[in-house]
Length: 260
Length: 313
Image 1 (cartoon, rainbow over the protein chains, first blue to last red):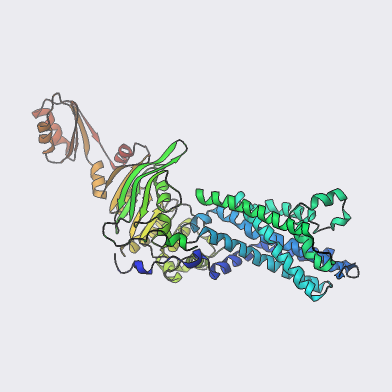
Image 2 (image 1 turned 45 degrees about the horizontal axis):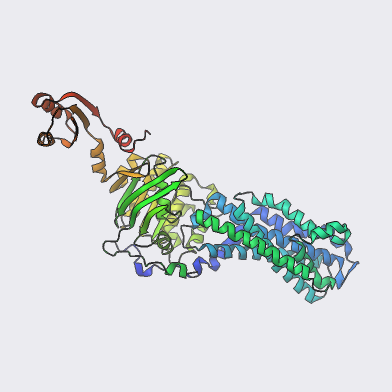
């Protein structure tokens, strides 16, 4: 061998299976460069808020006004679209063959999934922050601690949909995965009471809605505002759906890495 | 996460007797089709090897197993004495694949930067861009690059870990003549650094022009293995066959000793001769021996390819 070739002593396997902040930064930049993702996650939720929330500043909703109630619901909606889009980006990478290219690097498949979840959560945080910022300008009123706690719950609860997005991303190898999932998410948001309060809908509808995946996080995120006691059913909803989607993602992921 | 890799045997670069690639009884089946059929092959460090064969011969299936992209149904693969996955993780082997996907929304430079972030140790981004001849394209979106430019981007990515072994799977498919020439001159300049190169191709000229060694593969098996000159010799000249009742080994050896005769084969009463000078052999057979029913066929490079691979192109 000539001297130009790296000697064996220098050949190391990267720490953390290839996970790095540079990789995370570039992944986030990629996601934000996708115009469709930006429109659906960062623009539509605040626009919905402005259209449907700002007219209720004088109506009371527990510790604040109805405007704040609508704002929290739409923050949950934005976070769920953002995290689904982040997770589902694996479908696009599989469809174009980028995941195959990544198999020629030291990147550990588990590190790849962690990067995807973190990217999804960063986008989810951005979506919540933008809805809350527009909400503050649009007349949302509630105590300071409620802003913090509701925002955090809306964001952390969106992990359900990061898992959902990953599961779908491994299930549907399609570049147009979000065009398929967009309507599904709208339906789930409707059943989760994010567009219209469930109390305004029929009793039978409410009973079904309790078992859908956006319901739990919606109830928990609004609880600090409404003053409702901790809803065990909502916590169970979030935990069980996260477990179901994560198990589905792991199952598909294992098949994927075995087959390549 | 690191333990998965570090538990594997340490790669043995430069250790005497450890081949860059060692395949033993390698077999891959897809349903009823056996794509790779008990392949045995050792590639020594520093060799430039062409994997030549028609489409569907099993070239890509073999390369996938060498890179750890798929698992053999039987047999073993070792890359520098370790598993393919460990060799990839250590940056010992990298590849330019036929269809490896690139992300259209990234620029050329970002694609290289992103890949570099996944390795423990890489060459500088600017250096690999320059070596692949795409420095001028650094700021361009991948989606706006031509097929040849994207292929050179894949080459730049493959250079990042400064691999001991570079694998190219039909790297110039779909390129125009100029793109193909540029690509190969970049590869050739690079190979002068002593890198081991394994490339799959179905272009005879590429194998002839760029390889030290040609492994001809057909239906998952190796049908010829030698220097380009040796492979050409298999195909050049003519093939004579004649019926020769009661031919003896000594008589066959006498034919073998004629000028220009490369090979003599006996099949019962039929004698087969490969020779550069078919006239001399024909004259000898018809005048000095009882041979009859003489047939002479010419064998060009293409004919040899068909004869050896059993597959018309």
